Image (tube, rainbow, N blue to C red; front, side, top):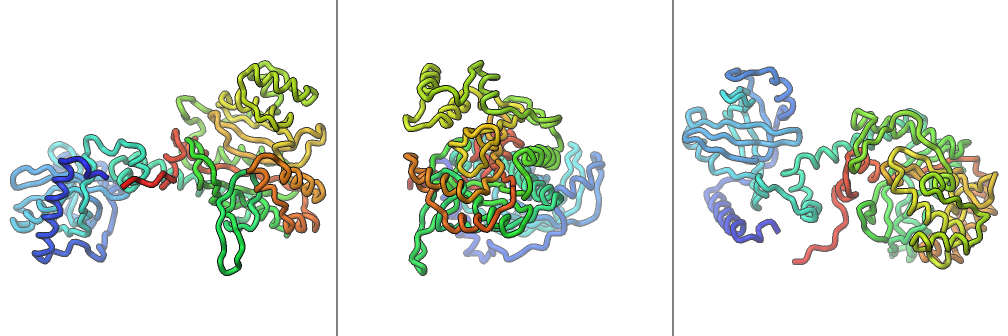
Length: 496
């Protein structure tokens, strides 16, 4: 806790005594409402042309948290911060009277306060509010982190995000950008004729990805259920039902590890378009991300982890096997024997699971040799079918699938494919997953009979895609960790 240090503990003790005295004197410490008529950003914009000595008699009503006091005899300067900005307050004993002035001095940093006053500019040139009346709206009991050192402990910032917003204004800007990103995604897809839908988060069979799910139990129906790992199979049911373009901005849950780019609860965009293939999805994706970047940041050139990335122009499209050769000089193909591939991986110190087929080995080598170098936007296409159980087989090579992943800044941002719509082949793929030695594949490879039944009624050709919104926000805000772009990331319980 913030008060664990001795000086803070003593300050908290004095604060509690002060609050007890205020209550004894009949002071109301927690009000019901305050009718503000503007915000600080609006005031700053309206009076941006004011110079030293200028003032206006218009009275405004603002509200926010007190962030600092500077007493100068019978006048006090303070800072108040609302959601939009911060401004200086000026309280004069001559203006409000001695009793009211002393009441203001009895306020504390962190208190929520309603202010009535007019605008002027000090001799030092700072736009300020001359306080005529004030009202305590909510008394802060705990001590805010001190202004000069702020809140620097990363884990404490994640646990107490409300304090993070208070003392680190740049953090709020990340989440305001996140809001713009999600709004822009909706705007783009709506303008392209997509319909936003909602699909179940509790599913009897977890499908649409290879991942370990969270399990729960529904008492009334006495059935086991799973938090969804992906909405894919339900969105495909909508395509089967006649919807031509659908999307969902969805929360997914995977009971797996935590890293700088993985959180057990995360946000995805998934969208599907009938009569389209993975080439169409590439075009949509490029246009979507360019639009989102312009709408949310105002530019197409971004900085991510020290690299300047241009989202402008046409993005590179290259197959996985071509990319391995381009970035490492190693020429691989499915004509290589499994032993040859394993030998090459071992010589490069790339660990391979002993049960991996050729496709998994090639993918592991791609991840190690190529992924980190994909800084500029690059579509890697034609993935091994072994790792693409829901994708359509490539017509030119039965070992490959019509699938791509988009990489920017060395990170996977999107995953898409031409959808597998043949029910017999889909059943065979499901059966293969059920036999897999990978626990995640076995769990998610349980045969979804209802989905197969839906496929048997006929699904039109379609392209489908998932984009990790958290990773996209990381990219567009130059954030190093997924925890920096999730309001309340999952953390280990705090020890008492």
